[in-house]
Each structure stands twice: as structure tokens, then as C-alpha cells.
Length: 200
Image 1 (cartoon, rainbow, N blue to C red):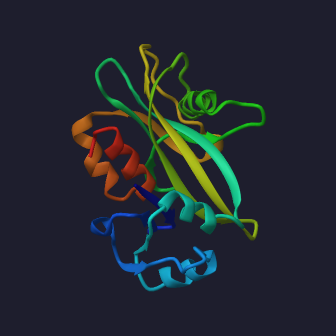
Image 2: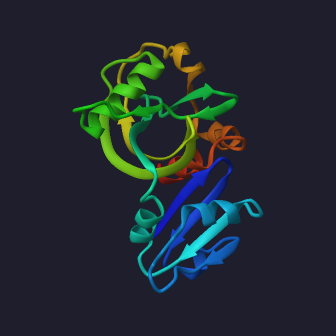
């Protein structure tokens, strides 16, 4: 099992597979302690850090024990032509996603966020694609955001419209052949989602 947690343009890989290791390799101590502060310190000198252990999921949980958790949902939506709905935000190509609201199910959150950020309606949610993990600082507090991604389908004909209030400047349908070029400057989480969806 592999769980990758992104911090800026760097990654912490939790895995039980030595062949999947990258950069510096850390093995948890006998107590199974994974100190977030230590991992962050080690990331200063590398782009990728591996936590190699028998239980990657448990070690990820131990590392995140002191972090605030945020759940989010998003989607890889396609139209009848097979094009993928992408957005341009903060200078990078991205996929629509957003935070879970109180009392909301993650499946509904994912569809709502894609519809809101791209100005379309009546999306059909398909199967679960993957989960991504992202660490960042929010108002001086460390946050671990887990985003749940679904495949989605759009049967309508309306052109997407970017939700500019969220910093989105473009919402467009992208041909599969053009996706790899757009991913060159994108986030690691988004590249992972596109790979899970079969586009990379």
C-alpha cells in the first residue's frame, strides 16, 4: 500500500514496499512514532521522503495525529466527446474540488463542488477514483486535507464558466491528448488523480 502526502511541491510517501521508496528513507522506531515536525525538517533537503513500514495507513494516521483534518471532494468529469473538465487557478492547471460542508456526504460534496466551480449542472457521479493528501499551514495551524475523487459524467451542452470568486480564471474541456502538457506545472495531487483516471 502507498499513501503520498504532499507539502508544497514535495512529497512524503508512506509505504510497505521498498521498491516504491524515493529520496531519504525513514523507518519508524519501535514505538511506531512518526513526528510531523521531524518529517518536515527532513523535507527541507529533499523533494521526496519515504516512511517505510509494515502499516503505511497507521503511520500516516500517527503522523497526522496533531494536525487539523479537513475533508474535501472533487471529480474528473468528462463530456460526451470524452474531454475532461479542468480549471486554471493560482497559475496552475487544476481539477475542481472543495471542502465538505457540515452534514454533507462526501459524494454529494464532490458533485456540488465541481458544479459550482465550473458553472454546470446535472453531473452524474461515477466510481471512486482515489484519495489525495495535502499538508499546508492555515492561519498558523497545520492542516491535513484529504480529498476524495470520483469519476463524473456530463451529458449537457452548456459551456463551463469559472467561479471567479474562488480564484478560478478558466474552466474548460480538455482533450485527453492535451492533458499531459497541462500537468507539467500542476500539483502532485492532481497528477496522481489524472493517473488514477487513466490519463497519465
